Every structure is written in structure tokens, then in C-alpha cells.
Amino acid sequence: MNQINATSDQMCFELPIFQANLGNSVLDASGFPVDFYFQDIGLKHTSFCQSAICYIDGSKGLLLYRGYPIEELCKHFQFESIMYLLLFGELPTSRTLKSFTKKLIKYRHIPDYCYSLLEHLPESSHPMGILLTLVSALAADSSQSLDDPDEMAIRIVAQMPILVALSQRHARTLKPVHQDSNDDSLGYVPDFLFRLFGQIPTEHTVTAFDQILTLHAEHEQNASTCTLRVSGSTGTNAYAALAAAITALWGPAHGGANEACMQMLEAIKTCDRIPEYIEKAKSKEDPFRLMGFGHRVYRSRDPRADVMKSLAKEVLDSKQDKPLFRLAPSLEKRALEDPYFISHQLYPNVDYYSGIVQRALGIENNAFTTIFALARTTGWMSHWLEMMRDKTPIIRPRQHYIGPRKRSL
Ligand code: CMC
Image 1 (cartoon, rainbow, N blue to C red):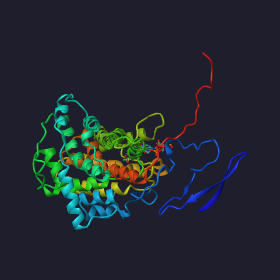
Image 2 (cartoon, helix red, strand yellow):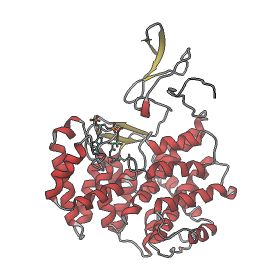
Image 3 (cartoon, helix red, strand yellow):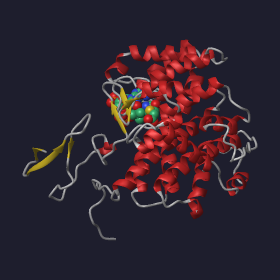
């Protein structure tokens, strides 16, 4: 352990530095001896936990799940193996994958009240709001909770496809597709697509969704995972922590960006309007931002965006949405040549092409984020399991108070 000096006007401290296995070292402030705080608005420089699940090198555009590069995982493994890897730390053997898959099927059902609850929600409800309502209902039902955290995590990832399919269908005023929960003929992704579309999906669609889920499955301490950890640290039940994470994901600065990006492309409509929107994004007077661009961590290309862009090329080859696809690369090219985007190190993120791909596969704009939630549930539950194993203390930060001094009425 190294020591460094941190000085202020009057004080000098020695703080230990921990070397990370990869990436930045960490200054250990846990034993800080005096009564003042570190200010880090937006937690840009704060490591608030230890984790062995995911590593991002934002300057190199590197994303590793349990040490494996995302591009290789996408190429060689189906989503069930990715789930196992994230939840339990290693890729499964054929024996462990078989027993994991069996459990996913065993837990693949939800209580009947979830279906009746849907009937009370307005048809105009947003799919993310419906998903949140269903997960909250499960949080209220103690019979859904399991004592063994591993089993609990598997139950949640197994139930999530049913909840997402129900949310999307309700928002499209379609009746649920009832699938025999004992029917083990369909794997995780095909079963989800059957519940969503009411027909057995093509192999091509299954492969595309498999990759979408893998790309979105995990991304270390993003806003929703951080929210899950904060709520999970209070000891609340796993469904309640999941509901908190879904809430955080919904916002357009996070998972909602794929929906906002598609709306933006639809508003721009034709390539001749690109310069106007680039100027809007650069203007400090205009709150508009180029959706699907920029990232808190990536200061070079988001590796997920590259895989998603290739997927978009494959998927759109046989589809009608081509005008949008022509617009998206043109806008990307113009932005990447612009001095503002260059100096601010703004590149397309995973959400830039994910909406286009999902649209081509039959998902409505307002449902994109529920697919993100389905994928990210594996990441969230991996962090929840890690917290359970590590016995994480309650997360309770402090603040820089800027309100009035004590005063009398
Ligand atoms: N368009 C135009 N300017 C931007 C953009 C953008 N998309 N993103 C950041 N900037 C500018 C921002 O105006 C600021 O400029 P200046 O320093 O001159 O005032 C500078 O870049 C830094 O911005 P910031 O908001 O401090 O950066 P951040 O790291 O806090 O925010 C972000 C990251 C993702 C919230 C932001 O880039 C953004 O709003 N992007 C659009 C929404 C989006 O695509 N979100 C999906 C993120 S990836 C999926 C996920 O992980 O959830």
C-alpha cells in the first residue's frame, strides 16, 4: 500500500492508495480522520464500491465482462452463458449451463394478479411505467422472495422476459400471450420473443436479440446500477431494489436515450437538416443534445456502438427503415468531423444505433428501454449478489450544505 499526502491550507494527511487490477488506482478515504467531506458533484471521481463484474477503459474503448471483451462474448456465446458469467463469475460448463437453463425454466412464471393488475392500467401507459408497476407488485408479495440469494437472482432474471413482454403488449393494446410455463422447448430469448410477438421467431431475429441483450447486460456503476446498490444496501427486498433501478434507467440521459434518439432522427428526417441539428446541439442557449452521443466514461468510441452498428447493417438489409439508417450514419459522420464534438470527445454510444435495430425487429419506440431493462436485469442482479456476498454497509453519502444558517422564526 502506497501513501500520499493530501494537503489543505492547514492540514496534511497520509492516505493509502489501492492499486486496481486494471485501471485507475483508488485513494482510500474511509479512514479520513477529520470532519470535512470530499466534494464530487455527480460522483465523477468517486469509487463507492469494490466490484469484480465489469471493467471499462473509457479512453481505449474497452469493455470487459468478468475479464472477457464484449466483442468476443457477442461473437461466441448465447445470452444464457453471458447471464451465468455475470451472475456467477465464470463461463458455464455444459453441465452448469444445463442446470442453470433448467432453473430459468423452473422460475419462468409470474402470479396471476400481474395479469389482472394490467387491466387497471390505462392503455396509454408507457411500457416502462407498466414494467415498474408489475415489478413493484412482486415487491409487495412476500411469497415471491426466496431466502437463497442465488435462487432469488435466477428467479428475477427468469421472470423479467414475461414482465417486459406483458408491458409492451399492454401498451400496444394487445392481449398477453399465454405460454405453458412447463414448456421447455424454447430457450430464454426465443421464449421472450414468442411471448412478445405471439409467434415462433426466426433464427435471425433470435441471434439479433441475443446480441442486443449481451451488449446491454452490464456497465459497472451507471446510474441505475448505482441506484440498485444504494437501495439494496438498505436491505430492501430484491424486487424493490430492481424497481428503483428501472426508475433510474427510464430517464433520457440513461436508458431512455434510445427512445429519445429515435425521436430525434424522426424529427431530423432528411440529411439536409443535419447541419441545423448539429448547431442546436452545440448551442449553449439550446438545451437540445445529440441523443445517443457522449458518455460519462467513454472518451473514445463506445465498443458497444460498433457492434450495434454492424448489427444494424445486417438487420436493415432486408427491411424498409432504410431512410433512417442512411440518416444515422450521415449525422454520425458530420458530428465526428465537427470541432465541438472532437474537442468534447463525444462519440456515438450504444443507444445511437440500438433504436434503429430494435425498430427493424418490430419493437415500438417507447418500448426500447424495456428491452434495455430486460438485458440490464442480469447486470443489476449480479451487483445485488455481489453486495449480498460482500455484506455491503448502507450507502449514505454526505453533502455540501449551502442553505441558510440557523435562524429564528
Ligand atoms: N450533445 C451535445 N453536447 C454534449 C452531449 C451531446 N450528446 N453530451 C455532452 N455534451 C457536452 C455538454 O454540453 C458539456 O459541454 P460544456 O463542457 O461545453 O458545457 C460537455 O459535453 C460535458 O457534458 P456533461 O453533461 O458534463 O457530461 P456527462 O459525462 O455528465 O454526461 C451524458 C454524459 C451521457 C449524460 C451526456 O453525454 C448526454 O446527455 N448524452 C446524450 C444522452 C445519451 O445519449 N445518453 C446515453 C448514455 S449511454 C447509455 C447508458 O449507459 O445509459
